[in-house]
Image 1 (spheres, helix red, strand yellow):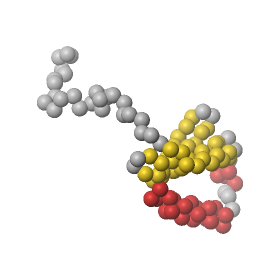
Image 2: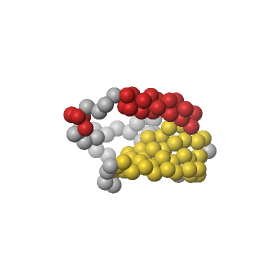
Image 3: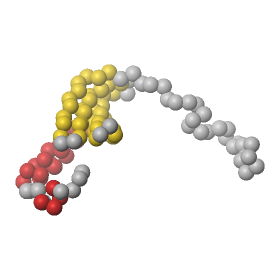
Image 4: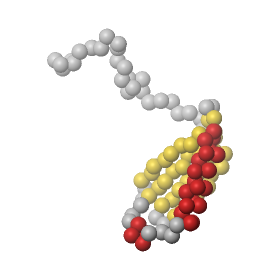
Amino acid sequence: MISNERPSPYGNRSSFASGPKPAVAEETLKTEKVQIERKTFVFTLKENPRGRFLRITEDVNGRRDAIIVPATGLHDFKTALEGIIKTSEENPPNPESAREDT
């Protein structure tokens, strides 16, 4: 033990002490893939013992990011997206913002 380390009275509480979490069985119900410019979006409706959810994965040159929306929030997610689409269609794009890399 290093001299400035002291054993905790609560034991080893590190999340690494118990090892990785076991994989949760997930069933894929539907998958849709959309290619937009240099980005690929994969929409996957899945189900596991805790419920259904939508996983949206963005793949840009091999780098992946994902968000998960519980099925209970899909209607609100759709409503928000429809509002954004409506605003985008009503307002012409700014030529300056079209040059920015998103």
